[in-house]
Length: 530
Image 1 (cartoon, rainbow, N blue to C red):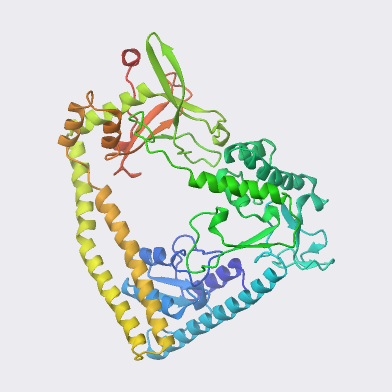
Image 2: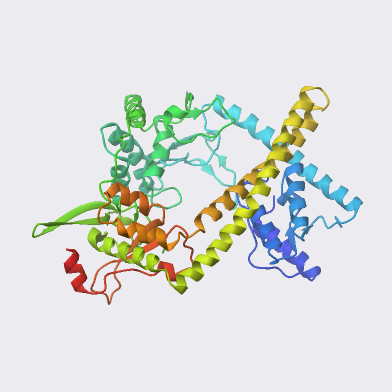
């Protein structure tokens, strides 16, 4: 096995020897299967070649490009059609000749063979581990760690040796002894099951854990979804889960999504009756009737928090009406993001609804007036939309051709005209092409829809009926043109409070003019609105 650093160094030596310049940063697909082209950056890298940023893709060896022959050849064909070529630092052959292509394909076949061998080995290992009551992987779980006798022969090693010959059995953190602070995770895991079974929300569970300084195994804060995934696994209740249907991926982590449950060999931190109560409530929540209602306010679900998190990124959580004050006979309501623990400032962010309403009306008025600036932007976006829309028919036609091709492969196999392995290889190739075209079609349809800026008459008509429209009608109309309204905290020198920025559906980072804050101009307008 070669580490990514070793592979990169070998590639750099190859580039220097061939007098080839590396463009940008190296592309890495760490911890991803070589057979999974959809998740890796192969298509993205080929697009860079197509855009003229590069002339070739260099890999340590051909297996780094892909571990299936059919999929690799499909993307190599895409790369060559884009005007590029695939080079291998350790398998330096000329793939422009018939003999070179033959050798390259043999290396790809070998990579696929190695993947098949690895897959078969893992299947046998997983089956054996399940029979022993061990999880399919030996990695540590939240609240659990390897036994005190386990150690790595070398710091860089991925494997452990155990003096106690535990066979990979994980033990609760409080049994480890050498790191007392880790015991908090085991206690929090068991308490999480109990709290939820007694009626607490996932937010309350994660909030209590955060206040105690409990983080994930990677040292990150755990939100509700992270806690939900940990608790739903049932590992803390001493169980192992699985699914009979291996062809589809589960859409959620809820316990009733899995139909295979077995006793694990590890110690449980939650009693069986607590687990049963947890599962009952999780399923009851899922089956509760979701009340369909009209929005009470026309800005409901459109307001997003723009306060920066500890990572320096916008929070972007939906802000809700929390808190209100009264000024005479008027009630002033506030959209608030209460997740202050996520904000770098450590404070909640709020803005009065009537102030946001003023911003939205100013934006609608500007769009209704149009002007040369808006006309130019509209024309540019319309041109992009037309270009995307013009490509859609060809992509749909190509998909129809591939669907017919897939049908012919099935019919040929059923009629005995094609051997099973040959039919499977052809089917894999067709599926890869179909997946690629479907992704392209979704992108084109999205670009064709979001790039179209409505005519100013649309905004003029909306403003004409604004005062008479119901909150539901306003909300429906705004959702057709606004992606969200982003609230940002006031600047240090600003005494007027938070800012609101209208982000239209067609906005992108380069459109500064559409993303400028539309806020009240003076105190008189605020008083009038109040």
